[in-house]
Image (tube, rainbow, N blue to C red):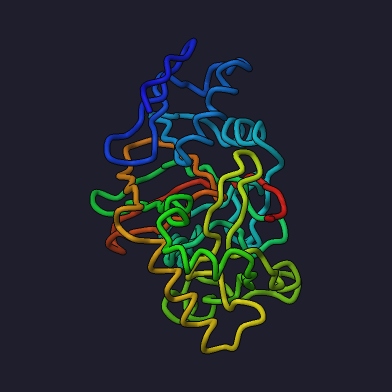
Length: 289
């Protein structure tokens, strides 16, 4: 795609990837409806948008996110930004012996909140404090993953359904990382498993995408366990091949807005002694079909 010239901003495709950088946007200034519609269109076209140098307040991040839809509150209330439950702190920082945020978010490939009946439309992650090395985020295009599937595999999975569970890897992560809290009974009631299509239709573009992930997808419904496990393992490989990926190397005050209906993502990690802090808002989507 070529560069789209906007009234005040530009959408520049990032070389060698499906993602794009939005140039000239300052969320400290009012965003008119025409520019908002262009950003919305670019989000559908590119799946991952990068907004540089966004020195904004939590209130401004929340307000911009809400223009795309209602916001979802993460089940880990322990890591909400004080006074702003819409913001999840993603951080490896420990203060006074307590973690300030979710330090291992994105350890496995996933689409945010796929374990909810109405998963996320998209997420916005704003860099607050970055490590001197590491900390990259990888995104994989699930529309391209679907297109690249062999025809016989497409036919096999097109109408299948799979279970997604927030708890799929939770205890494994708790064993590795002491900052993961034990979930209360109230929290457990909010993350009961749901069944989603293995291949979903994007509600705005009509494009097909794989909708399984190693983090949250536990089994394919109505298949024997061994067959389900083998098929999911195959789909996980197809969905995360290097040629499908965009790797985001964070710059100070970047805000990245990705479409959870179109991509999965993975945190590459950074040395534990280097501080990293991000603020995430999550926009509610539609029930997958």
